[in-house]
Every structure is written in C-alpha cells, then in structure tokens.
Length: 370
Ligand code: 13P
Ligand code: SF4
Image (cartoon, rainbow, N blue to C red; front, top):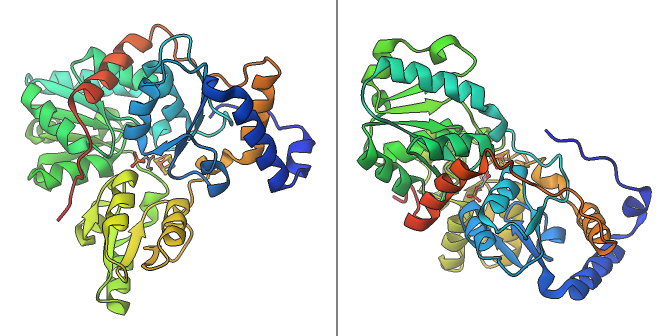
C-alpha cells in the first residue's frame, strides 16, 4: 500500500458543507480541464461531485475517452487509477485523492509469483495457456498478460473474455480473484472438478502435476475481503423470512452464494436490475454497503437491504473522502500536481495490450443471470 501523508488539520475541521462549497467552486473554475470519475462504492458525499460514475468497465471506457481533459481525478482505488493512466494519452494526468486507497485483492498477486506459476504450468503441460487477469490487479500483472497472449477482464465482461480465451488456447490461468473466475467458468458449463486452486504461497501452488494436467481453469488463490463476508446461510435465512425476496450479488462473492442467488453481475448491472424492477419488489443485495444504501435511498418504493446483517464496507474505497478530494483540488489550483498515478513505461506496453484487447472486443454481460 502506498503512503498518504496526513492532511493539514483545516480539512478535518471544516464542516461537510464548507468542503462541498469549496469543491463545487473548484469544479466551476477548472471547467473542462478537470474530470472527476467516481466508482459506485464511493460515499454519497463524494459521488455527488463525479462527472461520471460507473463500474470498473464503464470507468475504463470513460477514462479512455478523456482526450481533452488535463486532470482526471479518480475517486476509486489504485488499480482503477493505473488503468486510467494506461488508457489516457500522456498529457492527461490521472490523480488518486488518497494514495493509500488500494485493493487488498489486487495485492494478492505479484509479478514474481505469477512468473513462478507460469514457469511451473509451462513445465506440466504442452497445451497453450492463456493468462487472464481481473482488472483488480497491478499494472505489472496486466503487462504480463498482454505480453503472453492474454487480456484483462472486469466483472462486467468476464464471461465474454473467458470464452474468447478458450478460443485462443486450451487452458486459462485466471487471477487474482478465485471467486470471479470460478463463478464465471461454472456459468459457462465448466465443472468444478475442471478447476484447480493455485496457492502462490506454496511450492507449485500446492498442486500436483497430475492436477494441473487435468484442469481447464487454474484459479489464483485471491479474494475480496468485502464480498467474502457474504454466505449461503444468509441467503437461506433471508428467504425464510421473505419468500418473495430476490437475491442479487456481485460475482466476487463465493460460489456457494452465487448458486443461492437469483442474479449475479457487476455493480453497474446491480444498479440496472434494481432500477428496472417493479415497485414493491424486495431485494437482498450482496455487495459493498455504500452502493446498497444508495439504491435503498434512490428506490423508496422497493424493499432494498444488504444480504448480510453486518456492514460490508470497502475500507480502502472509503479513504477517498471530501477532505482528500478538496485537498487534491486545492493543490491543483495552486499549480501543484498531487498523487499523480504514473505507470512506468517498461510496464505500460503489455498492460495497454491487455486492457485494449478487452475494450476493443467486449462490452458488458452479466455472468450468471438465471
Ligand atoms: P465492478 O467492476 O463491478 O464495479 O467491481 C469492482 C470492484 O472492485 C468490486 O469489488
Ligand atoms: Fe478491492 Fe474488494 Fe474493495 Fe473491490 S470491494 S476494491 S475487490 S477490496
């Protein structure tokens, strides 16, 4: 995780209204020079200033289209800002308001581990393996995938990308989210016994050569700590209390949860499904709490609550607050460039290939709509 120095005390001392007024004034003054992007898990206080909101796929597409802006302030987490830097032209400066807003899942795969895994897989099978990385990963991992015939995916297009990958080769290594990989492959008709779990902490991933030879999909042992809080037991409990409830989850949830759910898809998909549902419908949603609360506020005519009784909060997304957003804009207005995210030139070319393969060929599709 990168280190974000503490802000001057004045930012915490200001009222929320004062911060909001000052952010709004900056936006007006910067005009078209500034674009603020907001992921759906951001707090309402921040989201209200976003020029565009979206899931990872939509925000990548929007970032790629920002040729005219001078500054793209990304209210999200580090891997999203890296992707935006990779996809924008050099003069566009991408900024993350809090450098410590990382993603614990992205940190579960590093390039040395992936190179070890790749060497081992190459020794165990002569068949062509395609590396596919969820965008929730470091630029070095994307670069590796781009250089080795693979691509990125998001939760919005994972199925289309896996289908593409299986047309390019016989096997896939999918990282870093085992759950997105397993849920997507299973929805495509690949059985669980055709998938193996590679643990980067163990020699040879903890697998035998025979297990690798028999596998179609090698899943990396990574997960989202937020979505891992949802359980199949919660699904059973909520259905027992509310037989009409529909359960709608993000595909980063464990396989057992997705199996119990009615629908699974990206944050953008979740928003659309709820918006399109009839008044009076009842929803239990398995994703980050800020999005669930926003949906409940936006649709008072529907019954909307979290699938979990506990608060499933992405603590790193939450670090981007109005204090950090205002500080960022104050710095820019003073002619400084805080927290610019720059992907090193030696990593960028392969990462561009991996991201561009995804964007050129695939739009969003839910993975497991039943
Ligand atoms: P989406 O692309 O569905 O918004 O998911 C991003 C993410 O990090 C979910 O945890
Ligand atoms: Fe990462 Fe999970 Fe937070 Fe998404 S919700 S940014 S996967 S930690």
